[in-house]
Length: 311
View (cartoon, rainbow, N blue to C red):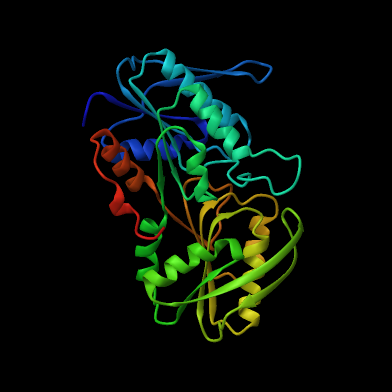
């Protein structure tokens, strides 16, 4: 391992950071996090990083302190004369705000990209962005990894003879179609309409799922309203079983309760976000090997194309 590489992790991804560093063949660097009585916090590198390639691991899910912590780490690394600063953001928060879908709203994903660049980041590594075009919001290189390299081996370990891929909404059609083509199976689509965020007005199923083992695929599971309703509809339409596969387990609000009451047999997620509670229905696949390998490739200027199995 090159001695010029140092890996640090923020509070939101501390356990994940430790595992990535271990898989890389290193240990997390010494970073102190102190908080004032009013809630303000300060971050300090407790070892020299001058001239080093510094990898900062932090998912930016709410609260906003997680994003602010990453920005402060980047600024601290820049002022400590790091050679290169790479933000490793397994879950890129605010990615659902990738466009103006109505008047007088912000493009939050672009704002976050600007903030990271202004703070001094030289490169960004992330996984399964909510919208591919977010890569173009950055003026620095972005390594956009796909969870397919983790999910596919698990899917292929199941009995796929009766499998059908499904998108929980029309926005996920491209992703589901990519998996369906790779696995040489059929695809179904759920068409949903919303009046307000996180509330589904109505939903219908496009495609034949009778007697099929359905695998719903999405990038984020938040309140689980869409996925659980889609799963129940698939079963009503004659599906044999329903699994769901989502990269980022946000699982907020009534998500766990909905999941337990739903007909979803298994929810397959990654550890980009730590689970808030355990569930017998949730299967967690780790991203640590993948990110450790990509960090190694970045340090040695090697290609990472082999990881793009399904995109």
